[in-house]
Image (cartoon, protein in one colour):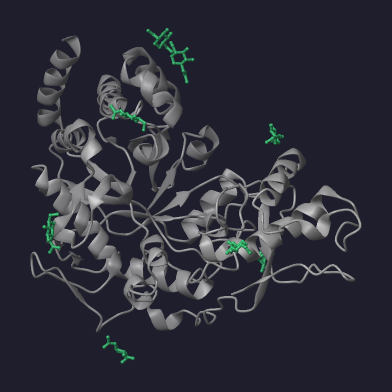
Length: 463
Ligand SMILES: *[C@@H]1O[C@H](CO)[C@@H](O)[C@H](O)[C@H]1NC(C)=O
Ligand SMILES: *[C@@H]1O[C@H](CO)[C@@H](O)[C@H](O)[C@H]1NC(C)=O
Ligand SMILES: *[C@@H]1O[C@H](CO)[C@@H](O)[C@H](O)[C@H]1NC(C)=O
Ligand SMILES: *[C@@H]1O[C@H](CO)[C@@H](O)[C@H](O)[C@H]1NC(C)=O
Ligand SMILES: *[C@@H]1O[C@H](CO)[C@@H](O)[C@H](O)[C@H]1NC(C)=O
Ligand SMILES: *[C@@H]1O[C@H](CO)[C@@H](O)[C@H](O)[C@H]1NC(C)=O
Ligand SMILES: *[C@@H]1O[C@H](CO)[C@@H](O)[C@H](O)[C@H]1NC(C)=O
Ligand SMILES: *[C@@H]1O[C@H](CO)[C@@H](O)[C@H](O)[C@H]1NC(C)=O
């Protein structure tokens, strides 16, 4: 009861306070400053690198005080994040919400242009349905705290990934998933509507293309196609790139729930510059092409928008500032950076959109790996976990581990890493056809040099 009364009060307060038009927002992209690396420059150095890139804004995945301090008086707009772990508690505890804002925002607000407060990160994808009912209440709590402290310029949102959609093709059939549409999305859209905030969306044409590289044209995914078009049979709208198609699917899903007027803010987009040997399309050529074309698209004047929202500005953050070596998962996860960890650019890029294409040096040609590959234990892998993975690989049958048995050619030298590397290669070579991967929870890595020795021949896959 109390909660409902509070919500009603919020609605009145919000509708009177938040009348600043979001149409004035800049299309010049920002950058996501992820910190999951053990070799990254300091916040101060990072901020000068961000300035050199001409990023309009920066998004961080926490509220790191050193970074907020380094961003003082820079004119760069900043997005900070309430960690996922706090969302449930904040949703029912205004004191905690206030405390968080007081500690993480208030001390910096006068000198650092904190403009966005994101409640968690991809919560629908990364938490269980136990957390979901708390997302929107936590957003109301955070907004209320901001009001209490008089921080009226800060918009509250929460970044979501494309997996919130049940249907995304054709775009006009875009629909939110049944399990969240009415319970989470509708109240969230109502919140975004009354607070005049944004739908923060993570959009990766790379992953969509990767899931079906045969039928999706790579140039269409890289904004490189002039003559490849996809027509939405429901609306007749003509698409010339995959990004627009994905974004419009979300616009149509919002419209379906009765919210046609909420602006999308691209919280993350980008393309990997490298990846595992078998990950095609992840190279410097494609990453440079995608990100340069993206900058060109969103900085165009007048704004181009998307087929369903022509002329609208698409504010954005490119993912990411650095290649981050501590991210888990496939190799591409660690290679979305605009910069190497030493701060040098992987390819030339100017986020202001003011460098004409001909001034950039040509990108290196796409260099997807072709040849034999092996799967071995990754550097620094946890030895206890490797023992478990070895035993898993060997239990899959098909004589995966025959050659590492005593007396067989790959037994000596008798080491866990040696045996596991053989077993991983053997497993991958046999089971790749049926979906087996070279990953083993991040304990394995793909290599192009043959680890065979003497009469011990490691099985390989051909890429
Ligand atoms: C959330 O609140 C519960 C109960 O008050 C507490 O035990 C827990 O430590 C809190 N969690 C976090 C992440 O603060
Ligand atoms: C709410 O948060 C405050 C501040 O962290 C804490 O002291 C208090 O115990 C919390 N209340 C409940 C009911 O968990
Ligand atoms: C939450 O998820 C569990 C396991 O996936 C499922 O059994 C349950 O029905 C879900 N609960 C709700 C309220 O959707
Ligand atoms: C859109 O979705 C509906 C219902 O799922 C389906 O019947 C229809 O064929 C779809 N439209 C197109 C153009 O695919
Ligand atoms: C698009 O144009 C390119 C270059 O002119 C050509 O190679 C390609 O076949 C064309 N694709 C389609 C689908 O027409
Ligand atoms: C930075 O690192 C990259 C990749 O390791 C390397 O190619 C480049 O030479 C380095 N640049 C400097 C200035 O050290
Ligand atoms: C190593 O892996 C084991 C088994 O999976 C796990 O219990 C242990 O916590 C891990 N150690 C470290 C340092 O991560
Ligand atoms: C495993 O070996 C059996 C018998 O030789 C064979 O039928 C099956 O296809 C093999 N499985 C894989 C995934 O190679």
